[in-house]
Length: 292
Image (cartoon, rainbow, N blue to C red; front, side, top):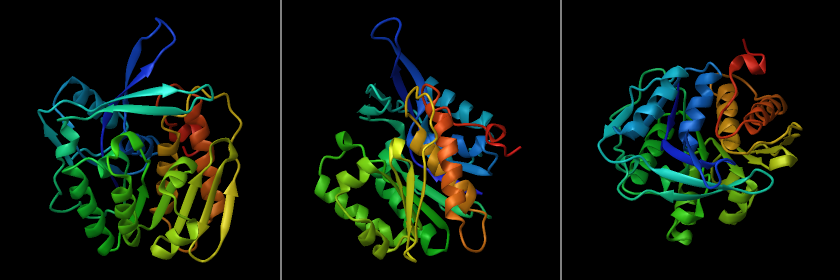
C-alpha cells in the first residue's frame, strides 16, 4: 500500500460561460495524487482531515470511486479549504487560498499506518499550515526512520508562506528523511537551492518537472536522465504535477533492484500529458495508459 498524506480542498475553477463563473472541482496536491494512484490501480490510502460539510462528502466520494482506502481519514465540522486558480494563456495556474479555520489544518498524527505500507507521499499546503504541518512532519520523520520509501513534493504556494526563510530552512530539515524529492522548475527557483546540495542532504533522487520541456531526474549515484513532454492540446495544467507524483510512486513503490529511470519518467510524462488535456485535475485511468 501507498499512503498519501495532505490536504483535500475545492478548486473554484474559472469557466468561460457565464463570464466570471467558478466551477467547484475536487483538488489539493495530495488529494489529486491519491486519486491518480487509485485510477492507476494502485493500493493506496489517503491520510488527512476532511470536513463533514458537503464539499468534504464530495471529496471523499471521488476518492472512494477511485478505490482509495479512507480508513486514515479524520473528519471535522470545520469548513473545507477553498482555492481559486487563475489560468495563464499557456494553461498554467496560480492560486489564491481560503484556509482560515478549515478542517484540514487540524490534522493529528495517527498512531500508526496499516501493515504492508511501502511508501508515503507528502507535500503542498499541508506542510505549511499549522498545527497540521507539524503533525505531517512528524509522520514523515517517523515513517522514514522505519524504512518507508518517502516522496516529498513541496508544491510551493508562496501566498501561504508568511516567512519564506523559515520555510526554506524547514524544507532542508526534511531532506534527510526523503527518498525522492520531486519539484517543479518554479519550486526549485523559489527554494533557491541546487540539485547537488539537495541530493547530498539525503534523497536518492531529485525529479524536476519542466513543463513543455519534460522531466529530468538526478540520482545520488551521479546519473541524469530525461523524458520529453508529450505534445498535446492543453486545457490546463491543474493536477499535472500530482499525476507525476502518482506515476513515480506507482513504478517505484513495488519495485526491487535498480530503477529504470528512463521508463519511469516516460510513464510519468504520458500520464501527466493526459491530465493536461482535461479541465481541472482529472488524472488518467490505468486503461488509458495500457495498464489493463
